[in-house]
Image 1 (cartoon, rainbow, N blue to C red):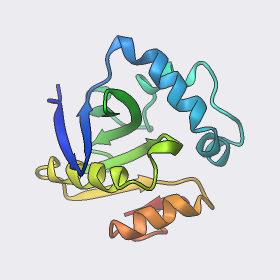
Image 2 (cartoon, rainbow, N blue to C red):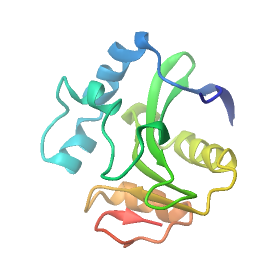
Image 3 (cartoon, one colour):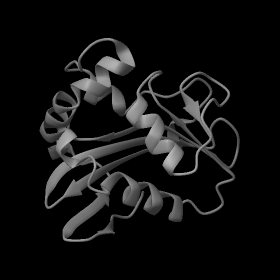
Length: 159
């Protein structure tokens, strides 16, 4: 279980927490608002099963107990989602598969504050990898500004 915590974004009340059953509707709304990301990642807009698949989708070889889902709530509204797997692709590593912010929440410093907060909470992590859809330039720039090196082991991955 991950504790909820506040992150510091000037002028905003931002909470990071685990998703709750009541978040299904807001997450569906978030996914619909982020159609640009889904089209870049999959070639299709988000579908109704995408929220449910978050809870059981894992990379090959990952342990279900290492899955971490976190909701970003800005002023009480679900504004983002992080899907990560601890100890993947190796012990001590963390693989971030989805780092999604609503379009209206982008460019406000929320993503950077969330990433920095997650890294600060990642005690003992030896490697962080993140995936970005190939050609998703805003995601690539975001990762580069955080200090990631693009072109990791697989296309669309950064370390």
